[in-house]
Length: 264
Length: 270
Image (cartoon, rainbow over all chains, first blue to last red):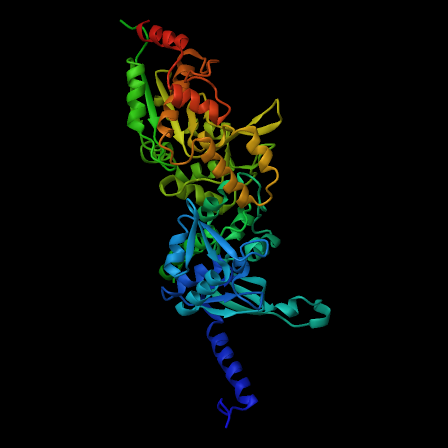
């Protein structure tokens, strides 16, 4: 007698496909689509979902977490400057005080806790999904056009696979240095990014959090995409700003959703 | 009896980067200059919007246009992004924003602030001294590059709180060592450690109030005599270029030199 129940291969396939397609169909129209599942995107999506917002995250890699798994130079410890340790408390991530105002946690522990918190809140994910374009309606971003990452990686002459569109009331660009959604607008001449700056490197964390917000109607920018958009100083492996920027993005999104509700 | 007309100083507060005991600064000025009336006002931009009815959207646009993109040339942005304008508009009233990480062209900001002061408040007998959290950068033509500033004298006088922390240099050894650190975060941590080690002024520092007193004096001396600075390193009017000099002039000594005490006495009883 087998330890596991007797289930055929086709049944397993049906379980995967049905579950995926059910979610895919339901979330083809979301309240908010977040581009990128790094720390800022995860934080923003978790904060929104736990307030009842229907959130879909698209992630071009086959794993979630972005650069949050590793603290830098292939070393796992991740650092946070006060007051970001309060978010670690909230997520139940163990950490130590390294020096005054500087906290250190284990990257895999912090990252997996954040992913779990987002999942627990009800966030849905599409992995290996790459942003191809934005849906723009009446002068505002109202969704994303996506394709499979492997398809996007091949020359179009070979693949000939059209992308598909997913609609939402808002899009949050949490794609990190790539600033993928913002760059799509730039390519259309709708705005001009400043590129990563070098001014006043030391104070970049405050600037990223404080600049998190609406960059174009329907599009909110968070995390390192903020630095790329506004030419703020780049920063290294300190994650406090990513978490707080994600929280801020969620606050802004809630305000924007409220405005949209009023209009409609 | 004094022949100098009574001077009124409008001292604009800014508490974003740590508590500055603004009434203590005002009392210090009142004590040194008995002929001066000091009125402590709200943050300048909030005051301009709330009291003078300035247009916050226009202010935000001008602030965003004064951002420095590149330190060497002090080049400012050509056309601000809507997000930059929103940031500035929000910053006027959201006092939790530190405004750190953004640098502004100092003279452009001074011009903007000056343009907001109504005609009836723009007179010699009313001096406007503005504390601001914003980091001010101006281009030093001789060196061909931008420098962060602690104070920009004129009408109005701007005293930058972030400038007090960031502009005066630490010791040369710090910058030599900094060149070997590649990661911006490690640079940041290293500089923070160096600030502590050298006892430099930091954000939220209790000593900021004392330092601000000295810069307010420089602004008043400039207004009254045209000469804000002193060559004596122990005088509060010394134009400090390093944190060590700043602390010596403003904290350790914390006094005017004999020459400037005499000038002050003459000003008071002229």
